[in-house]
Length: 251
Image 1 (cartoon, rainbow, N blue to C red):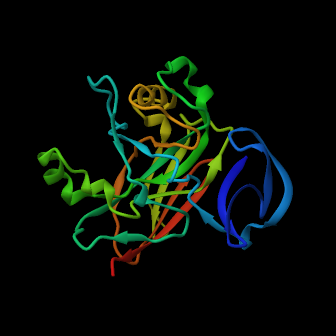
Image 2: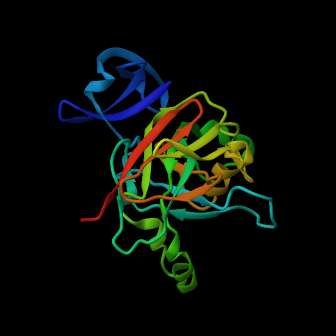
Image 3: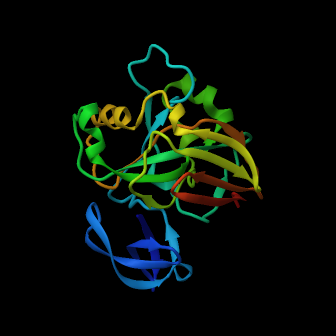
């Protein structure tokens, strides 16, 4: 099931996408949502990021691919609300940017309030998954981490495209992840390469903060590459679909 947030008839709504149609949601969005009556054609709506940043947060995971090391768990950082954009919205290349990179990731969407939960019960709190592009300004990494007080490289406005919707019923630990720049595949990986799996990530983050229905946890990326003004960046996750965003200059 694909759960979408969209603009239709000048109203922000939630619905269920079935093929080229959008249907109303019966029951609670986070508890047994079912497709109801037809609302409109998918082409009639503007898809928005499937998260309400006024009420939800994006605690992102750092360094979750590669060889397992001695850490107890991964790093966690927050993407500020202004970073979040939806499908087809432009990523703005910052004026002080020189080496901006994409990071194609699986986003874990929380379906129930979670706090201090164990790994064994963590999957009961997962609603589904979405595509995330954790855009970063790589050239600022050294200065930001050296200062110990700034995460500018992760926090520029538009640096967290999410979408096109939330998909339920998937195995989040075994999803193919691709990133394409102008139609050319530059990253081809799988969430099976994560050091910490979905259940471990949800449990880990829940020890730091309460997770609420609708929160999104980007789970780390299998590879990166640079982007430039004029590019179109596509993040495709198996079973979900494709999140596409053009890159525009900051004017």
